[in-house]
Length: 537
Image (cartoon, rainbow, N blue to C red; front, side, top):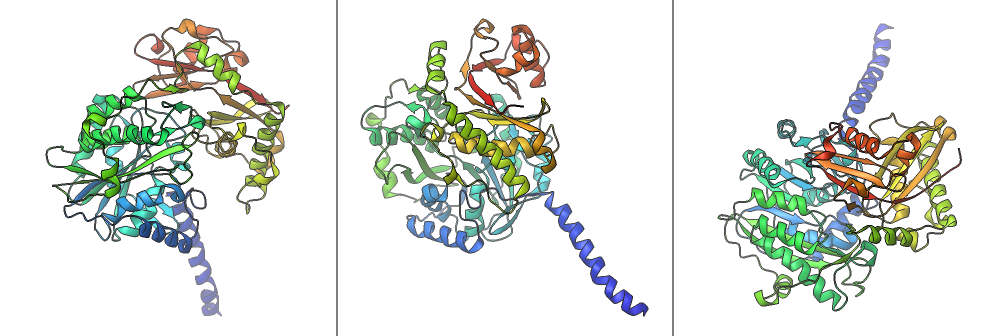
């Protein structure tokens, strides 16, 4: 009898122990956020998708050791061929470590952020972190672990399936989101990274190139759009191939080109030794090459490889792109919306961005349905977008914050400061982020939903101010940046608390973890307006 009981109990104990181990492991794994969105969501489908990208990419022979790549991070249907062209140069290679320099599309911060995960998940399996390097870098004064910024971010995650496909198994990754930083901070971080950049380490800077078109609010050209967009990106690529971080920085500042991964690229160029490293453009394409319409949504993608000695890598596509010196572009001052230079521009932007009452109700219903689907119908991926009237305005890109309140008290608030996605998609993302990823609050529970009201703030682009006299309380939201600190308060907050301008400034400093008077010297202040609307409480 005892033996029988033991025979029954042992499998049960094993099952419990397995569940406990699995539960503990899940807390340390970055669950894949991009499957089914940026790339196909099953192992078989993703394997076929990457194989198709590899077939479409040109075959480039690289005879010298590859030490670094610059690779796009857009969706595979758009950037997959360019990504494959770069990753083909390391196919079958063996590295013990891959340091991936990405960005945060949703959060702005100074310095860098490394997540405290032990592994990243993709449909192709788990990719372990180099936890020893991670823990060492987290001791650096300019490195933090901003956990929320990594949850949904694709700039690092989208590189992983290609790495899993082309490299021999056994490598570990160091995923780093690179924010704004001074030249001094960048050099200091490069010095901290350099001991880990041995001949068994690959560096990958994740970046798309210029985002041009009406939907991006950046139209530096009116004529010959394809030619001028190619030249604009080629000007940046020339500085990159020269491994000239100062030249690249100055070019970005001069043209205001919207290269989303400019900060990872700057850090990569700071790390590379220009005397012993050679850069080659493998392939450049543009998202509008198929349609031929470069006026609305045009994004450049470049695959660039860096080798330890002179490489024979050449690309016919790259050679066509590369202009002679006398053909380098002399772009006019960009006509853009980000950032706004004057209060009049800001006023115009606000008038252009007003949503109708019907559009507001569509977004509020979309946010509500998103939360109900996530909490009550966990088997569904999300709301059925066919049920909503998504007008052209709702498909434009804009910064948006979603605020949740429970009985009038804040229950979560997260948003995108800049327009990185269509408004409707930004609302979907940040309804979930506010409910489940705001580090100040526990996750919203299903039983709470009936007591929660939703408020949405659709923003104008940020405008840097020279004097605090430009701040209009009740109209302006405010951001502050100083050192590695960053804070944001929405326009409605001062009114809710009855603050005047001086009190507003004190609280924006506190939001950033700065002294109350930190705004007076060495801080960057930016204002924005917003159209704010919400459900009735």
